[in-house]
Length: 131
Image 1: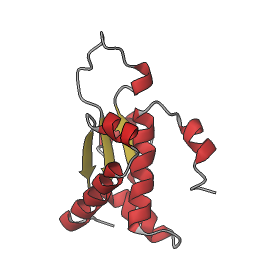
Image 2: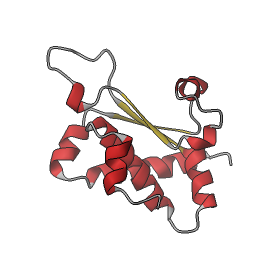
Image 3: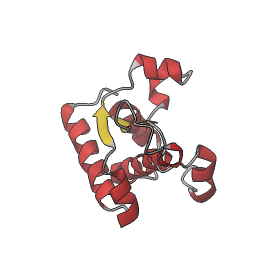
């Protein structure tokens, strides 16, 4: 599935609305993170994650989690959350139990949770999405 500019814009709109609805503490902590929505993951991202199929990567957090940051250690680049429209739309098409809004919100919250210092195991303990 090849996403259009309208798909990318819609996904970004949903993601920004999701961030705006985070609890105040998390919303404030999210303010410095760049949100990037692209059609597909960059090949280097896939290589870095040892993924061959770009459809497997719906989102990615790049940065230093808040729990590992120090005020004396400035980050050379801003933290970023990437959402990938093609993989999101493929997953949406494969699943019949979620809406685009629900899926994008889920991926957005998952990636921002990494910014807050949560591991995939931490997220899985409270997130029953994949059951």
